[in-house]
Image 1: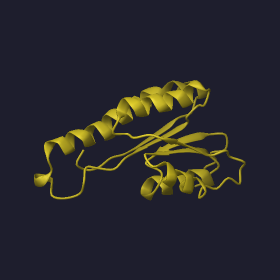
Image 2 (image 1 turned 60 degrees about the vertical axis):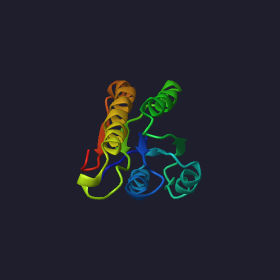
Image 3 (image 1 turned 135 degrees about the horizontal axis):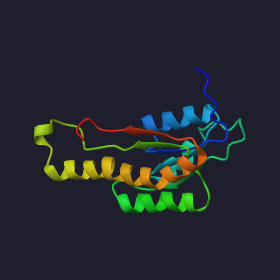
Length: 147
């Protein structure tokens, strides 16, 4: 499939490693300008170096923690308020810790619910007006099966 994402901007959460970083790399290869997000600034700086920029993209990163829903939404709103349209949003976060569900404390499940669902909802609400105005938008939610 030939997908050209030139002149599109993608925000990929959880992108300092693993599935998030792999997604960010592929979007960059397709021509998208990618904003990678995670909690770890040092890992983000290293991950940024791995993104293809042969289409002239100006990739960037934002340090944010999806377990703090309101803070994450505020950071994305700051990006949008500067005039950046997020055409592609990839909601991706870890947790709860792996192990038998029966042994998982309720507080861990509540935090995972907030991290995955509440943060995702707030980010969608933040970027959707720009997607509508641009006439283009894609939202991908990657969730833990426990959520």
